[in-house]
Amino acid sequence: MVRSSLELRKVMRMSDTDVIIYEVGPRDGLQNEAKFVSTATKVDLINRLSRTGLRKIEVTSFVSPKWVPQMADNADVMSSIDRVSDVTYVALTPNVKGIEAAIKASADEVAIFAAASESFSQRNINCSIKESIERFKPVMEIAAEQKLQVRGYVSCVTHCPYEGEIAAVNVVRVSEELMKIGCYQISLGDTIGKAKPKDIEKLLIAHKAVMSRNDLALHCHDTYGNALNNIKEGLEQGIRTFDSSVAGLGGCPYAEGAKGNVATEAVLKMLGEMGISTGVDLKKIIETAKFISKALTRIQD
Ligand code: HMG
Ligand code: MG
Image (cartoon, rainbow, N blue to C red):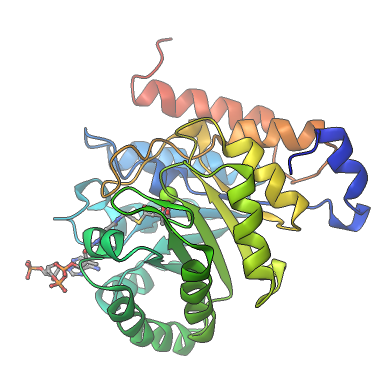
C-alpha cells in the first residue's frame, strides 16, 4: 500500500527517520555508457560526490573488461580518487580475481552480486545461481582475512528480462545464502524497473520473515517511473538504505531495457519533503548531476 508522503511520515517513528543513500552512479550509472567515459571524468565525479555528505559510494567494478569495457580502468579510478575519511568507497567483485584487484587498489568494501533468476545469472556472470554462491565463498574468505565488509546484491527480485515474474520465495532463498556466507547487507535489485509497490511489499514481507529489515537495502531502477513509489513502500516496510544514482544514470549491460537507477536527487527531494534526513546536500547533488550530464553530453551549457 502506498500512502501519501505525509501519511507515511506520520506512521514512521522519529528514531526511524535516518535513511542511508548508497550512491551507485559511478558504477551502475556508468557501466552501460556506450562511449568510454574518461578516467579523469570518473574520478572528478566521485570526488564531487564525496563532498556532498554521501557516506557510501560504489566507485567501480572489478569485472572482466571483455564483459564490461566501461569499467576497464577500475584500478586507476579507485587509486586516483581523493578519499574523504568518512566515505566508504565500494567496488563490485564477482570472483577471487576481482577481490584481489580491488584490495590492491584499496577498496574499503566490496560487493558480490547474484540473481534470483537462473537466466539472468547465466547472462550476467556466466554461471548458475548455485555456482555463483560457490564462487563467492573464497571471495568471502579473502574479505574476512582483510576485514572488509561485503555487501550482497540479488538481481531480478520481482521480474527478470528473460523469465518474467520471479517468486519472492526464490529471492529469499538467494538472500539467505548470501547472508549465510557472510554478507552484512542484501541489496534487492529491481533490475529492469518493473516492480510495483505491491510487488515490493510482498518481497519485503517475505524477507522480514527470515531476516531483519536492517539487513536489507532496495536498489530500484526507474525504467517505468515506479521507483519513488517503490521506495515509499520500502520505507513503510522499515527499509532504511536505498541505492540511487546521481542524474539517474545507469543500466545493466545484461538486462536489455534496464534504464537508469532512480536519481539520487529525486530520492533526496522526496525524502526531504517527508522530513526524513539523509545528511546529503541536495544542492550539491544537483550540481554534480549537471556536471556528469554535461560530461556525457546529455545537456548543453
Ligand atoms: P567468465 O568468462 O566465465 O570468467 O566470466 P573466467 O573465469 O572463465 O575468465 C574469463 C576471462 O576473464 C579470463 O581472461 C579471466 O582472466 C578474465 P582471458 O584469459 O580470457 O584473457 N577475468 C577477469 N578479468 C578481470 N577481472 C575479473 C575477472 N574474472 C575473470 N574479476 C565473470 C565470469 C564474472 C568474470 C564475467 O561474467 C563478468 O565479468 N561479468 C560481469 C558482469 C557485470 O559486471 N554486470 C553488471 C554488474 S551487475 C548489475 O549491474 C546489477 C546490479 O546493479 C543490481 C541490479 O540492478 O539488479 C548489481
Ligand atoms: Mg543495478
